[in-house]
Length: 402
Image 1 (cartoon, rainbow, N blue to C red):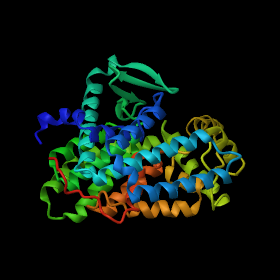
Image 2: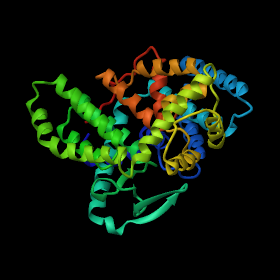
Image 3: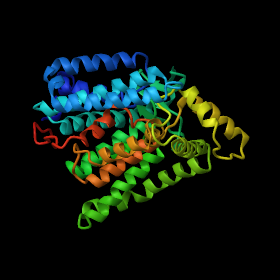
Image 4: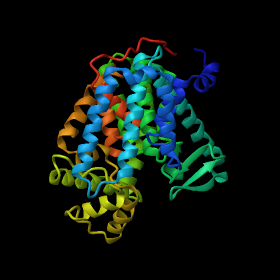
C-alpha cells in the first residue's frame, strides 16, 4: 500500500475504526461519554459480523467470564461498585467481540494494529515538532480535573521534562500510556518489519514523551537487538553514535524521578506496588472486587504501608491516590479478582498468539507496560489475554501492509 493512501485507508475501513476506538478506550483522554462509545462500538462490531455471537469460542468464553464476574460481585457486594463492573464488562465484551471479529475477517489484526501504531507514531512526532516551534502559543485546557497544554485541540501536552520541554501525550491522558504504543511500534519496526527509518521515527517520538518507563523499554529493545544481531554493523553504528545523546536525556530523566521534582512519581509507583501486594495477601482468593477510588483508599488505609518521613509527600499520596487509584494494573488484577484469576491472567498473557515474533521480549514489554500504567484491564490489552485462551493462532498472513 502506498503511503499517499494511508490516511484515507484509516478512515474508510471499518476494521481500523473499530481498532482505533479500542485503543482510545485503552488509555485515551478521559472525555465524557466513554461508556456510550463502548456501547456503540460493541453494537457495530456485532452488527458487522452477526456470526460472532454464534461462534463456540465466543459463547464459551463469554459465559465463563460472566460467571466469574457474578461470583466476584456477590462475594464482594458490600464494597463493590456496580458501575465499575459495568465498565469493565463492556471493555471485556468489546475486546472479545473484536478478537472474534478478526478470527473470521479477511483482514489481519496484526497488520491493522501496525497501521494504527504507525499513525500514532507519525502523529506523535509531528506533535513533538510543533511543541518545539510553537511552545509559547500553547493554551491550557482542563479535562477531568487534569490540566493540559494544547495546540488547536489536536495536540496535547503535560508537565515538562528535559530542558523544560513539554511532554507530548497525543490523545492519551498521560505520556506514560503513549510511550507504550510507541514502544510496541518500535518493536514492530525493529523485529517484525525491520524498517530502519520507522525505527528512527519511533525513537524520536518516545523521547518526546519524557517517560522513564518508555526509556527503559526502549533501551531494553535495543539491548536485546545488540545481543541477537551482533553482525548488524548498521544498527551497532547508529546505537553507538546516538548513545551519548540518549544517555544524557535518560540520566537527566532518571535523576529527576529519583531526586528531583519528579520524585513523587517514583514514590507513587512504589506505594502502588506495596499497597497492591498487601491487599492481595489479605484477600487472596476472590480479591476485594471492583470498587470505586474512595472505597479503595479506605481499604488501603486499613493496612500498614510505606513509612514516609516527608509529611508533604504523605499528603501528596492521599490527594493523588484519591484521584487515580492504583496505577499498577498487573497487581490490580491480583487484588481485584484474587490470586487464581491473576495466575490465569499471566498464563494467558504469556500464551498470547497475536505477536509471535520475539515473543519473549514482547511479553516483557507488555508486563512492564501494565505494571506502570492502569491499562491492564482495558480492551486492547484484554485482546492479548483473550488470545492466550485460543488454541488456534490468529492468521497473520491475511491482507498485508507495507
